[in-house]
Length: 345
Image (tube, rainbow, N blue to C red; front, side, top):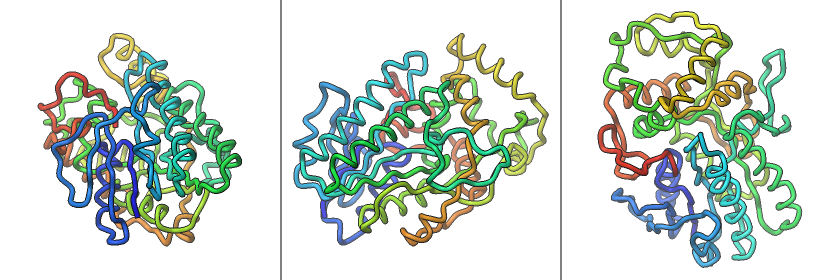
């Protein structure tokens, strides 16, 4: 089996290529990224290629592939949504259509919990039938939702191509800590003091709760989706549901209540001054995300996470305090990221 992975050098990509390469049934893993990494993974061949319109000849790269795992995503610049749309939406469509032309048998697409419409008011977890219209005020959720709509028509036009949509909760691992700090917090977050007992307090935004998953656990689900004859969407998540108090316990600190409106106003001001990369619309979206249930992944992929959500976040926080990373451009350790490292996988 030959598998191609786009966005192979980022948080999800590095875990997915390692997981696939460990399977003896997978004869070759082709990892595609904008820049060839220094990272060596046995069984993985790297190719530098761009999925943007006018970029690489994807038909040639996908020729002879049994499956394509599409993970490539550009998080920044948040001040230029046209640029992220060009990569994430138009580039994603190029990947989908190239799969059809190249005769690829399976496409596994990285959607997200962010593709979902705001959750039910009673807070009950939703399954994969919940609407995927995203939140219109955030580029990330708009783009994820748009690709869901495109795939609705694409899979009807190409029934011979097995299309799988993975909708994971927030993915964390130690080696992705520096990348995620750069993507969402920027230089204002003093990463060296993100250690138990060093932070004096943690703002507790009213209404904020989230679900998490270790990236390596997500990679096992992607692997299962490649090798099993499944189709359609799969939620991926670990228990328990987390809030700021749970994170504060991991950091051995206290929380300070912060109204959501005040948090948004502060974030918006910092974003307008280019002090933080995360746009305020993303906070709006996170506060409205539904809780998701991973029953279908458990039943059809025979998948359950090895680590709890707390363990995944705890590992990320430990990596954040150490400035952890990997030898790829997106995952470069703190203090080594140079110009151009904009959170693109």
